Structures are given as C-alpha cells and as structure tokens.
Image (cartoon, rainbow, N blue to C red; front, top):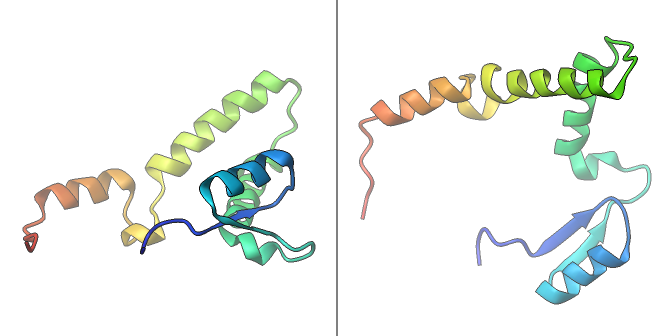
Length: 106
C-alpha cells in the first residue's frame, strides 16, 4: 500500500514507542547513534531554529523564549518561501493553486 507508514523511525526508545509499533504492527527502526542523517528533516529544522533564533538571543525568562518562538514559527511557516512549493510562500502557493486551470483526470 503506497503512502502508508510501514516503519516508525524513533530517536528515543521506550515502552510507548514499542507499544505503538506492536499495536499497529509497524516495524520500529531506531536512529543509530552518531547517524543524524537518518532523520535529516528534523536535524535540518533543529539547525535552522538554533541558527535563526536560539543562538541570536540570551533569554532571561522562559516566557521570552515562548514568545520569540511563536513569532519565529509564524514567519517560518507562513512568510518564508519554501523549496517544496517552488520558492513560493504558502500563501502565494495557495493563491496559485486556487487560480490554476489544471484539470483533474477521472
């Protein structure tokens, strides 16, 4: 079946992950120590968050971190061009998709 998760890849081990895998009959592959490229999307996001937000500020309170993270998240998800969307922002892509004249085949 295409598009269905057959393997759950986890960074941490634990009873909860094993239970999910057993209940849904999915295999679990743990990320090998020293092999962060096995989880490249998360590692790239972590690097971006660190470079663009956490390394630039010295936060005095947890509330300051939460507020800065909130505004960064909005900019990251809504205002920045995405490679997967042809370097358009999500809003621009949605407008393009609405005005597209592509026909859906039966």
